[in-house]
Length: 85
Image (cartoon, rainbow, N blue to C red; front, side, top):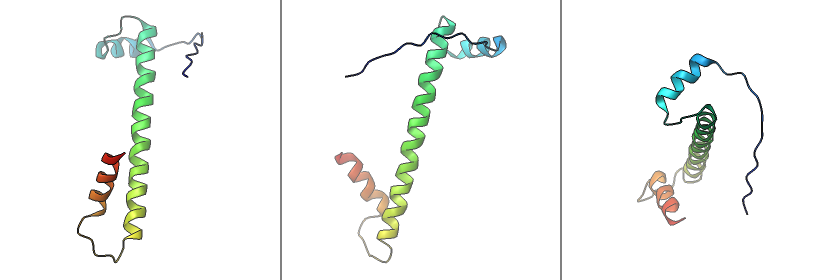
């Protein structure tokens, strides 16, 4: 179950930065712009975390498979595993 909580707050924003950001956004209000920015930040950070764990899993797999002759590369094995999930 997901519960959305809203937090009311007042912040001082850089007007020039807000104007520039509005040019790149479809947002009509500052509130919508800030929500879009927060969602983008969360998406970008989550993707970066996913990439980092992928690199860690790949390095661990390559270490475990060092010296083992395989028909497929470790990268291909991880890709197949990801597809199965």
